[in-house]
Image 1 (cartoon, helix red, strand yellow):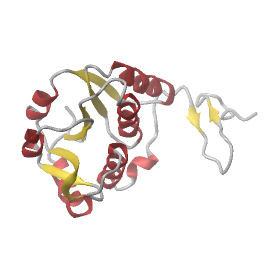
Image 2 (image 1 turned 90 degrees about the vertical axis):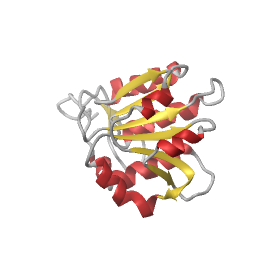
Image 3 (image 1 turned 120 degrees about the vertical axis):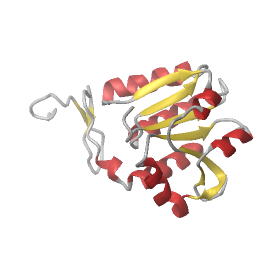
Image 4 (image 1 turned 30 degrees about the horizontal axis):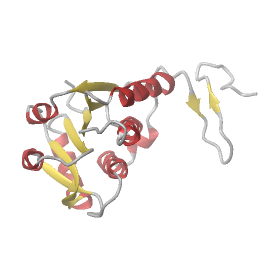
Length: 184
């Protein structure tokens, strides 16, 4: 496995309650620089949605379903970051996390339900974004932006069927292979 890789593990998923949030964890991971998301095996709908977005808007990005999330985390070879409001402040540990990530692939654990204490113990870093209650999606977004120091915002996407054209107002989505950029 490429040592520069970042995998986001969504721990736990309560069908009917967490569907949208789990999907947004995957979409945020993809959009903000992670290479892969691992969902619980009961989050198939979220996995399908993220795969569909990747097909339309480009990749590479991997989506995986697993039923052995504790073992997956325990057996991870590389640094593990657990995002939790009880962790050390992201601004105090971001440099140390980047240095650890330079040594191997990084696993970022994002809880969807009560996270067992062994995740806290196994993590190399328990990291809090503001140490206040808020969305795990917001925490993941801030963490990834700090990890990549904003470089993820310049990412180019391969094999995209669609590309959003930034503009001040309105919405413009084009076929990236269209010679004139989809101009109408």
